[in-house]
Length: 342
Ligand code: 13P
Image (cartoon, rainbow, N blue to C red):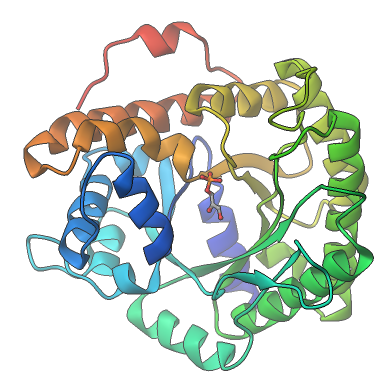
């Protein structure tokens, strides 16, 4: 394992004004996104859609890396170049989702364990050869009926740490993603308690497995009110709770924290990140690894037609610029009114 290379890659992913585009929806998830705009999901439509992001001119100003799904890492864009080559050509690092999904945690109804450890070193080594430089593994925890259980918290933390150690061995920077879902009527206080427990357990396991903390990125949920909680915390409450908890649990050795958007609206995800960075300086970079919050307006604009690519790209670049500004706490609502430039 080349620790210095891992550190350089991790720092490049959280370079100033930049963050990550999560475009690693599994075949099932991207079908759901396409269903929402009435577009059939095929290998051709999937690369057609994703290529819109990969070829958006100027994306590299605010996008440091893109997380890909196995299929996409092996596809070519319209001009015949492979996806990793096209991304590297503009200084964007290709990443790869390496887990094989959240499956039912046997003995614990309603809870899940993320799978994919078998054969993982071989797969990571192959991904590195194809061009990937970082990886992602997502653990999922749901708050309901006194859950998550200790079994769920522990099993997922252990799997995340096993994955992180293996990814580093293959030269890939592991994005460690413990996602406590925002679905539910839990309060922000309950969300903070569960998130703190999940994250602390993850760092304990990372230490047991000798993971090089300077060469990882943490991808957590923000601490907010559950989606159906009657009282919704304000942007400043969310920023304060999230930063407070991260300070308690995440060692300063970790170079960056790249939040998921988790179902927040695109603008709200930007506002939250901006408010957190206004509370700095922090011991780690606070950045983004958004899927829906970077893609949603572009998906609608694209609507299944290559002819709409310029409008979709403008919508994507606009969100990327807003989030880039949120990296320094300089995002303002007036930016939303500014005309989107392609
Ligand atoms: P969202 O930002 O849509 O939550 O996606 C991020 C991600 O990669 C989830 O694993």
